[in-house]
Image (cartoon, rainbow, N blue to C red):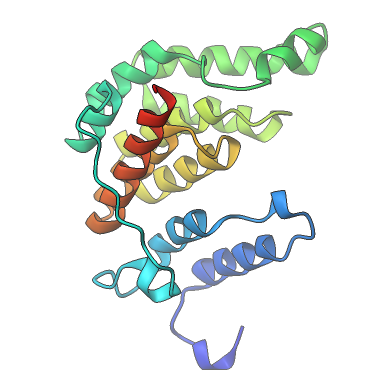
Length: 220
C-alpha cells in the first residue's frame, strides 16, 4: 500500500480495496465491475460518510425521478420493513434466477448436486421459518460450492444478515446479487436497505431509484 495512506484504512478495508482494484484490471471486459458497482462497493469503506461516494470517486451522478408506482418489494424497502421484504422474497422464490435450473437438471444425478439441493432446501426452510442464523449457515455452505451463482441465494442471505444486525455483510451479498444479474431490481433494493442501515441515506436513495427505474422498464 502507498505509504501516504498509512493509518487511513484498517487492514481488512485495505484488502477489500486491493481486491476491487484487481478486478478492475481483469483482461476481459465482462469480468471488470462497472462504475455503479464500484460506488456501492466502496461505500462501506468510506470514512467521511457525509461526502457522497460518487463525489469522492469523481463520478457524475445522474438523478432520476422515482417512478410513481413501486412494487411491493420496492415499497417495503423504501419504508425499511424487513418483515415485508421477507414475505416478498419467500413468495417470489427462485423465478428470477437465470440458468441454474438447466444446469441442475443436466447434472442432478451427481452426488455434488444432490448435496447442493439439500443445502438449498435446508436454507430455504430456515429462511421461510425466520430462523435466519441457520439460513445463513446453509446458504453460506451452498455459496461455497455453487457452480452457477444464484442471485436469489445472495438476496436471501442479505436479508438474513440484515435480520441479524449485520448490514455490511448484507450489503456485500446484495452487491454479489447484482454481479450475478446486473439489472435485477431486487439486488438494487437490497443494497438500498443495507445502505440505509449503514446510515448512508443518499446512496440508499440512489439505489432505490435505480431499482425502481429498472423495475419500471421490466414491466413496460
